[in-house]
Image 1: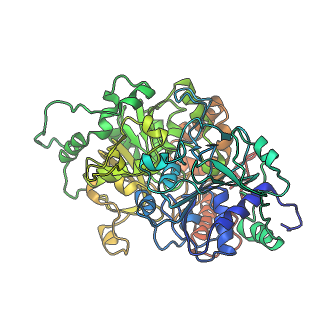
Image 2: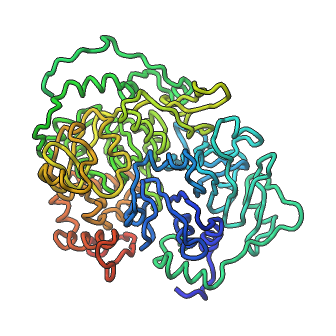
Image 3: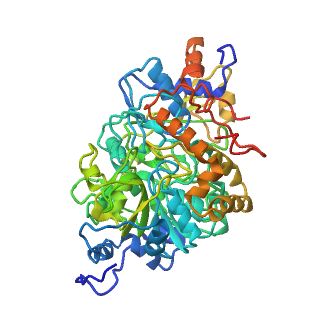
Length: 261
Length: 376
């Protein structure tokens, strides 16, 4: 695929997530865009990162995009394939640097929901997948980053179900609940990059993508976004070279970076 | 099981002290339905009653399922969804019409089959869906209609710890995941409590040992006693083999005891966990089997669209499961020897054992009118 084609929001997402990964980190990777991003990071600025997958695969030799976190691309020539309990335990014992998770809903304190739409557990509007490894990753990894598309139905004052704890009710509440690490450090969406205000733990704009004004980002949120002091920086776009790597080497079949039609 | 005499450590059933808030939220009044999963002492008695020596456990899939899977069982999922899961064994459970099953597992592929068909009435839920292919729409529908009832809600890691505790003979363990989430409000088995070792505030989640009734585990090779060797991810298979009351092994090949002894991998699951050994080549079909074959892309891609409504889904599953008599029929439907050749090549290339050149991993979504030839 040519790099002249205009960049789509998923490609932008993949690039920004990749930028969050530093070289030499050990990262816990879930299905979808985070996989694309981590492979992009490895092929560009972070060649020495180690991938960990919940089904037990670690540090596979990359060939194609995995279609499942249990599929052969997640353990292709892995030096070790761990049992599931042991894989998550690496995060609990302090050996995982970063984790990346998607969400169906996220709230102002970074609590995320992949359980259900609607608050009635016994009769939800839609039942989603449930936790899978999301709760484990959000509870245990050192630094957690959320990734997803942003709209007012996904960015809510209160999520319908807390699958993955963020900063809970803000302030000191996460610490009080006994969770090991700090809450999420960033939320990356189709509109911008967010962090959390240090004392209240409310979601705060960090950068906005090219063409997105604070007003537009606010329109795509069901709660009030905290604005930082001063001017809001524009998120850096991927270069032509990076887009080329993304399209030709990372996900040449467009499995994850093609927009759904 | 041969009637070995064992001394029971108690005469009365244990009364369990469940998480009351979760019982209320889930509207579970009669808690006896929850008991067997955490009754590790009763599970131990069942294992004590078995013959423990290395004996020949070979039988057919039909016999194994008829004898070892009972109506009302807590049926555990193996491996990871469409990777290394003993799906042909699951299909036989459906063909034999086993009823009122409780499904458990991380993930919960057994639910995607058993619930629409009405075999699974209850579940211990951790993850139901198809990752990048989206949610299982039939699961959502059946929760809402009350066709299936969730008895407990888990994360993968919490459930994995419950199996691990059971494998290691511990009544339970403590975890740091689950805290602050709503799952502990919808799981009668989980309890947030203070770490008994700490004088400072240190909340932990107590996870009880989980003992399912039965699991079918698919492996690459086993000897006739049940010593198992496999490639790819174990996920929870090693733990659940020890945690379950009854274990059926299906394998690509029954090998000699020498072959297990002199292979670098040795046995990953020991014979004494196992009740039946079934030689069942292609037993993970239509899923992926490490070292052997790629997933049946036609089957799955069409399946994802068929979950849109219950009737279409049931018709599709009927066509593939109830109207086939065994795995041979299933492979014939998918293209026979041609499918085997392509699928084996694709798996070998995916795992880095042959040159991937000329092997296609491209995905095509199923569209109306497409045939198995269009998506191999």
